[in-house]
Image (tube, rainbow, N blue to C red; front, side, top):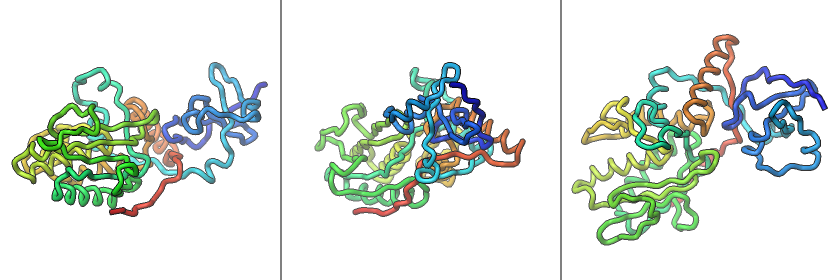
Length: 307
């Protein structure tokens, strides 16, 4: 069976899938490559689906659900940023300007929370620390679209556990946190979506509780995207590697977090793909005067907090 296929006129990226993976027949049926289809819908196909597969060169093309765009997704225009901001962002997410410490540093991908973050504090967490961290987390949730943070009173209902660890509390919720001081460990799926975190706080690690809170805020912010610290931000920034005693969340920190959770960029990509997407988007705008669009599953705006 031979079917003539052409690229969409509208350049799009489908939740981490390149625009080159979306094609369309003259009859109006959309197709996507087999590996891309599996990323979105899994590997279960109906008999009718398999009968309509198309072989094009080395690629197997699968019919795209006709009603998916209407019922399950939103179309978001590309969000342009100046080159200075993007280079800072790429260093924080991909360590672009940092010498790799281990082999995995060369293959970093963008990681983010897709599901709502539900935080559980154990009884071993200092009361003042708990109160301040909840205030910080709530502020970020309110300021950043698509970042939904709430608090639960039952461990089994959580996907983010904050626990105290010191000379009196020696139980670790995750042994992969090697530090005896402060640290966190996150888990993510094949699409680079973070789905679980354990954050360890040692209130004996700092004599001054304010210094401890700065460290905790740095870790919490880092756990929202597996962020790295950079020397491209002022020393006052929580995401700066430069030492400064009185660090705080700066407007630049917040802008980076907002951009990370913006759906005007392709999610879960590596550095090469991220840069290529921006190159294509800018070229498209210069040549056509129109923005490239990204299609994403419909977003939840649930901002309810639970104490």
